[in-house]
Amino acid sequence: MKTILNPGKAEWIKSLKRPVQKTKDIEKIVKPILRKVKRSGDKALKKFALEYDHVQIKNLLVTSEEVMKSKDLIDPQLKKAILVAKGNIEKFHAAQVSPELKMEVMEGVTCMRRSVPIQKVGLYIPGGTAPLFSTVLMLGIPANLAGCEEIVLCTPPDSEGNIHPAILFTADLIGIDKIVKSGGAQAVAAMTFGTESVPKVDKIFGPGNQYVTAAKQLAVKNGVAIDMPAGPSEVLVYADETAIPSFVAADLLSQAEHGVDSQVVLVTTTEKFASKVKKELESQLEKLPRKDIAKRALDNSVTVVMANQEKAIELINDYAPEHLIICVENEDEVVGQIINAGSVFIGNFTPESAGDYASGTNHTLPTYGYARNYSGVSLDSFYKKITYQKITEKGIQNLGPTIETMAANELLDAHKYAVSVRLKYLKDKK
Ligand SMILES: NC(=O)c1ccc[n+]([C@@H]2O[C@H](COP(=O)([O-])OP(=O)(O)OC[C@H]3O[C@@H](n4cnc5c(N)ncnc54)[C@H](O)[C@@H]3O)[C@@H](O)[C@H]2O)c1
Ligand SMILES: N[C@H](CO)Cc1c[nH]c[nH+]1
Ligand SMILES: [Zn+2]
Image 1 (tube, rainbow, N blue to C red):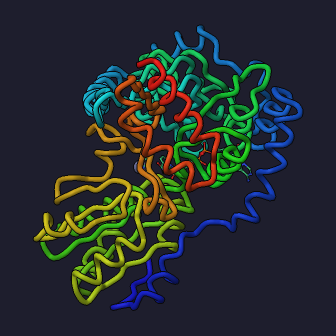
Image 2: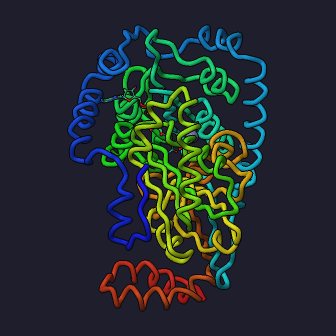
Image 3: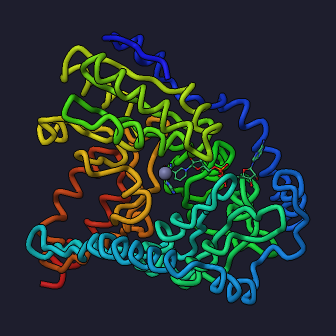
């Protein structure tokens, strides 16, 4: 992890570039995958499972026997942990319900807004290098709470053609029964176009690697909505001397171990603190089973020593991290100035993994700096907001002249007439 001292904006932009392949290069791989799935459906999904997951898949859909079997394969301690996490995630997401809005904006003119669930949703659960069963909770719980009618879950099979039992157990726990053994861009393509086994959906959710993320972005061009670009995980830790170096190092490594294309950033105010964290990183890294992955991610990562807090905050908002840990003396003041971040973790005892698993917030969050213009997944992500209006005779008499004037000035006479004809009718009735 290289260190840079007091960089200006141009230097930090250059040093903090995310280690992602160029869109053009990744689309060269992903576009043909989408095309082939569109054309050949299940046959293409099986072909890509062989090519990328190195497994011959007979049945793309998980059977109820496979789900039943998974229940015996889960350690009771893990079952208990999943239930605790489920409880917290449900509580926090259920509290996000926005009540129906109904108001009379002027006499006789009533406007309403209601949340209506998206009917068919597709959940992508990553499984390339780690079986992210926690993502089943993060996507399945709000989909259920919102009342989505059809939920399909896609996740890559292992080399035996199985899905990790914890993914099956968790999916079953929240009532998802359409589980497809398919990962990567091909799974996203299947949910975009539909295949013999996979229904076409209205919106695709979930994180994934660069191929998955690029496929989701291309899905949009084919009429399907997506939650957001949620690619390789990242964390930025902003820490001063009140932070505990071993905690900071552990948090950086927790995201570095996700994948070689993850990026972690430490922003601090003194070189002394930076070198304490560096020492901790070196010793903790050696003990990690995924140290080879984390080490490569650290090669893409940076420590920035900033002259003052104002500059540090400017850098943070410019970088727009997926996860931001704030561990400084005046935390409230700093938190109040953050405008670009997916999710914020405050203080020495708030590890980022709390949000990954069990505190209640959603871990499906924008990466690549998309925290500038996207929010993470929430209950709202599973709804459309439909507006309604009802205008009475009195209402159209009150509002009609305003509409007529505006329509006439936009040179749209038919718009104006739709009001005038009603006003005349009411006048003649008198
Ligand atoms: N932003 C978030 O909210 C968030 C949350 C959780 C995880 N993540 C990220 O999700 C990612 C999970 O990645 P993963 O790879 O472990 O699992 P994944 O399920 O996203 O991807 C695995 C699939 O990628 C495809 N693939 C692999 N190599 C390929 C190649 N060369 N060409 C085409 N397709 C290929 C295969 O089909 C494979 O099944 C990580 O980068 C992690 O950081 C992000
Ligand atoms: N850190 C990931 C989001 O970027 C989520 C996750 C799942 N499991 C562990 N971590
Ligand atoms: Zn994580």
